[in-house]
Length: 203
Image 1 (cartoon, rainbow, N blue to C red):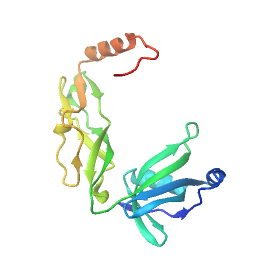
Image 2 (cartoon, rainbow, N blue to C red):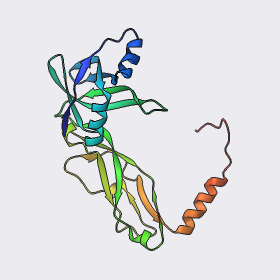
Image 3 (spheres, rainbow, N blue to C red):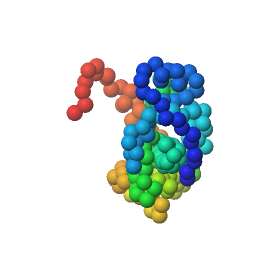
Image 4 (cartoon, helix red, strand yellow):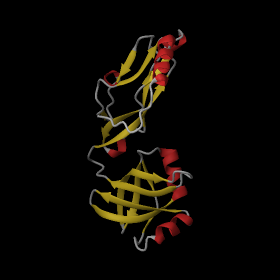
């Protein structure tokens, strides 16, 4: 899916210009990648927010820069910690004929037989890495858990093949499992009982 976004090229100095843009409802941004040098731009925050809400973060966003049509993907958005206002956005220009890799959200669908029997559903993986041409990138990957009984689990390897995209995430990654309610409660209690060590570093 491709949607159009109006953008304007902008100056990068002085730095105060960024705040002026934000106060006027614009977001400082930059686009770089396929057949384009790094170019500072600004976009209307409301328009970009609506595009992402209606089409998802993996939608192809087409913009006109210097009279040239550029197909892009949202690469990174920096948000204000307190207001969630966009502070800066990065767009990656892409070749529509070449595969690219992005993360897609995992959405569990259905009600498992194990949960109906009193088990507890535990989701362990919330995103998978997928590869496809930009126009075929999925926003979400649905996982049917209807037949998941107590003691069963679904891994990435269990996902059905899709002709539009390939899943890159390791096949043995566990997506979800249904466990007995008592086992789930014991695991939660053990985690709560573990002491917190300040300054401990992960290996």
